Length: 213
Image 1 (cartoon, rainbow, N blue to C red):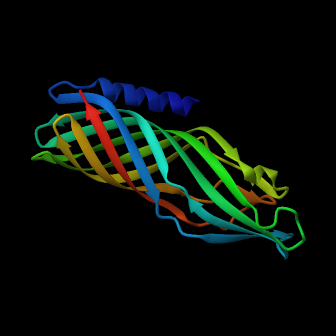
Image 2 (tube, helix red, strand yellow):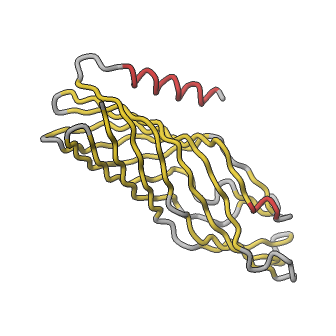
């Protein structure tokens, strides 16, 4: 909660800071395609006898809605956003001990508050920028909870970075972004108190459309 208050205070300050700048506020939507690949992690008893095989299948595309502010100061621009995001991860379990869950597709469904901060160069309506992003976990529902060997050790806030190429046309703007989280796919997933072997970095391409006033 303390981290959330700090992030919220930073966002409000940046949102309100528009001295000596042309600033617009507005609404935006985004669509994110994840670049993660399929991966397998094994579950063992006493690090010897393998009992299950858990496969990461995919991260489904994320959809986001929220608000933004964009300030243009000569050749520089600053942009901050708060977006409500929904996304899912899919897993499949294979059992070596005749378990009823064999072959089932399991889902983790996330609801996040994404806070993005970007700054960079602004010229002839084109924008090129980089900046940090923060995922604040609002809610999660995981079918993995039904697995006897599964344990969750999840952080409420995770971080990453992003780079964008954007274009402003009238009251609207369009951004194409590359995004990368600092955490790995399996950082929160533990099997029998051992961290999973999922090593996928969470990379994504996203398309943002904003309307300002």
